[in-house]
Length: 319
Image 1 (cartoon, one colour):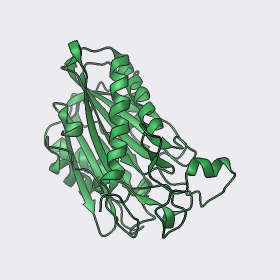
Image 2 (tube, helix red, strand yellow; image 1 turned 90 degrees about the vertical axis):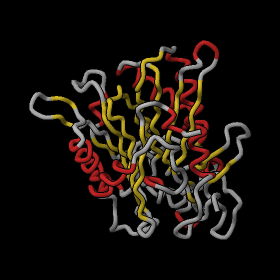
Image 3 (tube, helix red, strand yellow; image 1 turned 30 degrees about the vertical axis):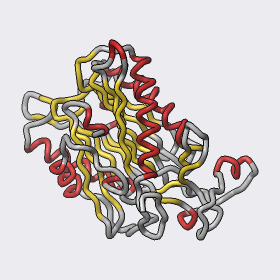
């Protein structure tokens, strides 16, 4: 299982700073991909999202960047643009080629060094490292400083990171694939949709591995630390052909996977975002693609916490 790179034409690269506990993840589609976005929650940080709107002149994007560092991390996208420009990739304006690179950030300044964030150079390095090989998962790239379960603050949170998964459709649609890459930095807990049990999240104390159950605590009126700095970022890619409106709808349908795997989700303290990429010519019903996208998203989210090791004093499930 390669994850997102199961989709032909899609490459993924990371750059990680394990001293500052931050980084960025770059998804390259140098041949161009039709893209759509669905943003929920109230704490987002983004750049170039309007280029994916159905009425925008740019027909495709050439990369997507996810970065830590809060708003400072948006700088990483300029390094990816520089990398693509040097390789002759971009929207042809008649004078030059302008790479179209949407970017979204998460807040990881509370775990490592708050004065060190992803830079232009880090973005360029992640782009240069991008490959078609299996996606590296866990505490890497934009997930280096990611955490979940922050009702009571970082002392009782758990480590998270990057996860990726691919779903292949069946029967006459067996040539169609839908894959997801998730960077999980959620306010809420991550749950297993099959059992409803919490996999990683807020703990009852800093020394305990017993889960507090964020949703239950909120319903009881518990007011914790409420850090206003979270966000889960997901990229969904398919080898099926979609127009921009179809890609936008696919992003919205993929949000169902986020809702099944994170509790609570889309909160005022998260900037949850899905970007969908169509990078192929296969034919499939949009609803079928949406079912697969939601499944790939929930599995990618589960892998993001299961494969993340303990870092920065925050315990993880991956060692």
